Image 1 (cartoon, rainbow, N blue to C red):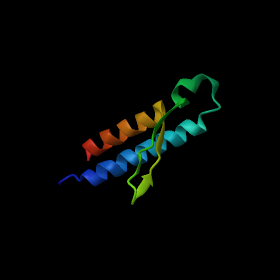
Image 2 (image 1 turned 120 degrees about the vertical axis):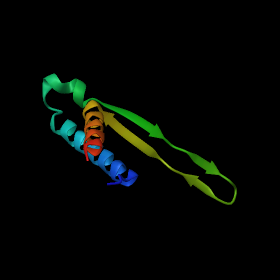
Image 3 (image 1 turned 90 degrees about the horizontal axis):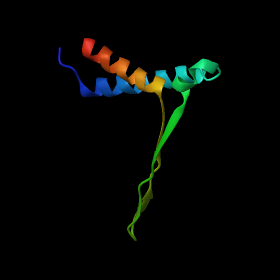
Image 4 (image 1 turned 135 degrees about the vertical axis):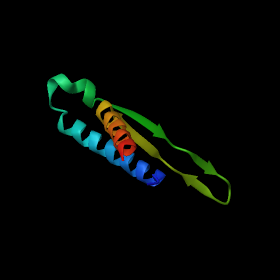
Amino acid sequence: MKKSAWVLVLLVFIGLLAGAMVARWLEDVPGLDFLTRTFKIDWSPSADLLVVNYSIHIGFDLSLLSIIGAIVSIWAYRRM
């Protein structure tokens, strides 16, 4: 069976989302703050070309649990 790159992208997205949800649920647990602390990554490309201008904002809030979720999803993809 041939593996599709789109399935991998979908699984990684689901893994990141699941990890972020678990991190949000465990925010109130005092001993797990190292797993739930988020790191913000922002990227804002923009240009003004006299005729066309654009501005895009892309932001990520990554936690250790969301990265673990992505790793688990890659592992599940390899097991398929």
